[in-house]
Length: 528
Image 1 (cartoon, rainbow, N blue to C red):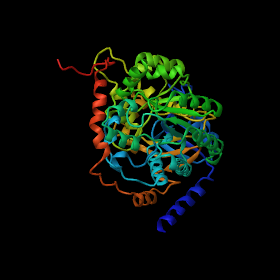
Image 2 (image 1 turned 120 degrees about the vertical axis):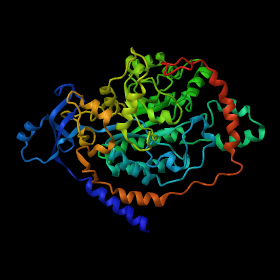
Image 3 (image 1 turned 30 degrees about the vertical axis):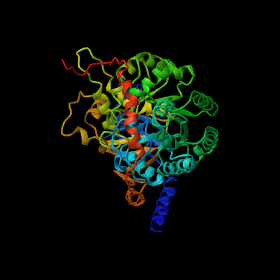
Image 4 (image 1 turned 30 degrees about the horizontal axis):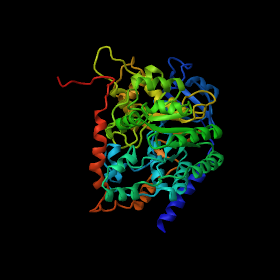
């Protein structure tokens, strides 16, 4: 009863906040616009942004805006920097991380024997995740949903969408689907190699749908896409998010391509996160996953791909030609032993790049500034002739490029006249005191020294969600209290755990794939 009253209080606070219409000037020592038309390289010194309602009306020197709008409230000061909101362009939208729930970092292919994890209320978990993202300066994200099965599919989606609507973030909400390879890449081959007793148990446990059936999936997508944008004041849109080419048949992906065109919905999919996914396509189809997808006519500028750790240069050329964005997730790729994506090569070839947290950031918290820094430093390979992706481009990956990849590029991602007012104010004393030489580029300084703790104010669609490090919509203490009460601890590990029995067979199945020929893009060290 107490929990019910608490949630009603939270929801009432959301309803009153959603009616606020604001007008203000956001001032900073630097305004990082992502538009080279403003000042030098898009960085306006002692600048400001005038916001009215949902929109940016003008970006100019502060003294000019103050003279034009003398009675307008000013937020920020010369101690602040103003920038577009950060965008996490690939993640699964969970508040509590896999580690917090009881999971351990390991290869995706070994999750058959993963430990049981705690269960939480979907709505509260998502709401908690939203609060964390707001505090980190993230104004836009994708929610790549991970459903609990066909029976709860729609319920899970509606609960999580409700949390985003109440939090006020801009989100592309992805509907997940998969229809093959539920246990390994190539289930039939794997099952045929199991002892009969174990084979029957494994098929009964794993060989069954985990998401909605395709017909139900497309009906739900159409219904939600026709209503959700209006219900969320235009801050939520629906995406198709098939799990990955190794988990989806060609016919299913063709249908998604067709429906995405008809409904004008974006698509995101995992691609070549691990070397075993690379080997699966070479062994099964005699071509790369990218070539297979291209033959399906699946790759477009409306389709973004997550990870791409094991892309070849030939694959990258295809993606660049199709205008298909690639979302880099460096922390997750390290933690799950997936590898390091060749972003310098991808940038050189012309693949549009974005950045995502993927629910597994390096310090288990959604610090996207730290993710930019990791992205920047992982590419610094030995050699006086080695090339790197410029820090300005990495900043674009975490802002405007992510906005484009998630279908919001016309509305957000940069600070310029006519765009929606999605912006962040950073208290620069956190990373610029006691001294930073004046010749240092502000974007370089932010990526080299910044932390999400510098985020002071967060604005989405002209609405101030967070100011002076305090939430104006959400009540985080109450959310945490309710979330804690909702946790159901992990179930005890069974003595006859099927996953543990299957693990040696899974390892044996993949071991020959480790012998597939590989040619690294760069050498980081040598044993001789």
